[in-house]
Image (cartoon, rainbow, N blue to C red; front, side, top):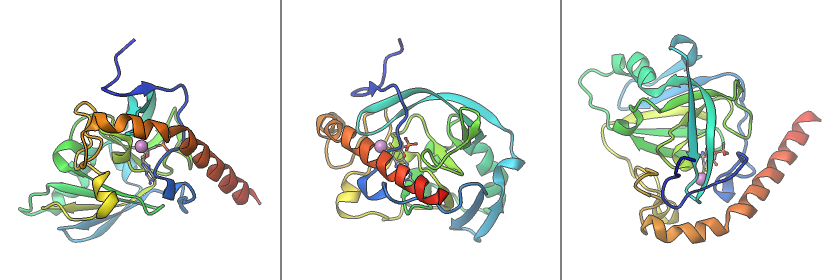
Amino acid sequence: MAILPPGQKAIDHFPRFGLPQYANRFPSEITKIELEINGDLEPFVIEDPLSQLPKVDQVSDFHCVTTWSKKELRWSGVRFCDFYEHFILPKLSDTKINYVYFRSQDGYKTSLPLEDLLKKDILLADKLDGTPLNVAHGAPLRLVAPAHYGYKNPKHVYDMEFYKEAKVSKSGLMKAIDHPRGRVAQEERASFAPGWLLRLPYRMGIKSTIKDFQKALDKHLKSRKI
Ligand SMILES: Nc1nc2c(c(=O)[nH]1)N[C@H]1C(S)=C(S)[C@@H](COP(=O)(O)O)O[C@H]1N2
Ligand SMILES: [Mo]
């Protein structure tokens, strides 16, 4: 059995997960993929971005910062580096982009350095296990960044912002629990404390978070059927 990154433990299912305040927030558009592009360039909109790029399948492990990992998830989509080269690079004159900010339909926001995003294993995924992403796991489009903690894998992405410099986009507790890179191998769980110190407190919240997220999802799916 392959060894997991420091502090991680495998679980046998892939739960819907996140910060408590997102449990009851859901995307409104779950089938059509449309991306708004903003930042240090002329804003524009890309309709159906994946149809214009080479499709890839990738099997990768997923690591949540709270220490659970789900091994061998089969994602399909396009490589972020292909997306960047095809859609973004041609729109930049001599602007050097260093940071990318993602916005999600449920209000979630996160960012990564461009350098990290251009690695071959970073995908914009529209499928999991061969079927379109469902509401639980990021419909209609999510970022898959296997070397980064789950919180750097935004679901329901509708907007990307490309900047020369890092922006101050979080404050207070949200800033403290964020890390500018969030790499799993380096255990970059947060900015305010070393990663190993957070293993136990984070682990203690897993069960109730999974339960709350599942309950909210059940309620949401039920309300949509009526
Ligand atoms: N839009 C959005 N993306 C998100 C989150 C969220 O609440 N909303 N939670 C993050 C966290 S903390 C984790 S661990 C993963 C969980 O992905 P999953 O729900 O598909 O398991 O999504 C990440 N991306
Ligand atoms: Mo997470």
